[in-house]
Image 1: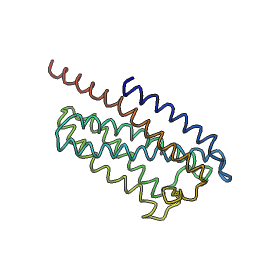
Image 2: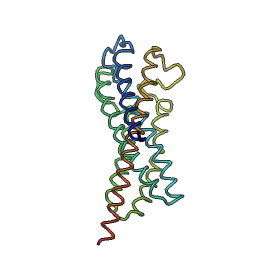
Image 3: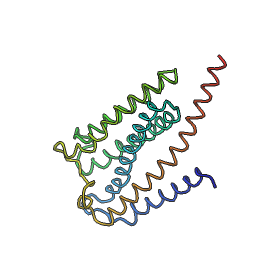
Image 4: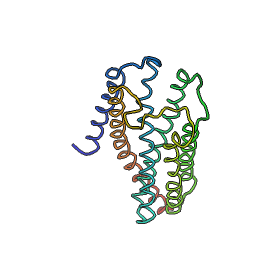
Length: 221
C-alpha cells in the first residue's frame, strides 16, 4: 500500500472519529446548545490554516535559498489548502456568532486580522495566476509567502494584544472547557492535521504535473 493510500485511509478514519467526538462524545454546552459543536471544526480549521501558511512560509524561504521548484510547488499547494480552511473559519465563525453574540459579524480584532489573512493569501494565489514566467512567479510568490505569514502571529496574539470578545481556549486548561470537550477539540485538531497532509500530498503531485505540462507547452512554441 503506497503512502497516499495510507494517508487517505487515515484521514477518513480520523475525520469520522472527530465527528463522533464532537457530536456524541463531547457533552452539549448548556447555554449555547448544539451550535457550540461548530467550535470543534472552527478551531481545527483555524489551526490547519495557520499550519498550512507556516509550511508556505518555510518552503518560500527554502525556494529562495535552494532555487528548487519543488519547494515552490509545496508552498503554493499549502497556501491553497490554508486559504480553503481559512474560508471555513470565516464561514463557521459567523454561524456560531449569531446565536452566541446576537450578530453575524463584528469587527473584533481576531475577526478583522483573520479577514486580512484571507485577503493576503488570496492575493498570493492571484499573483501566481497573473505571472507567466515560472522563475519570476515563484520568486514574487515566495516574497508574499514570507511577508504574508507575519499576519499569522498577529491573528493568534490579537486576543492578548487588544480588548476582544472572542473566546480564548488556547491557554492552560483549555480556557475552562469541560475535559471531554477539550479531548474532542484535540482529536479534531489531530484529524484535521492528518487531512492536511493527505490533501497536500495530492495537490503537490498535481502542481508538479502542471509545471511539467507548462514546460512542454513552452518548449513546443
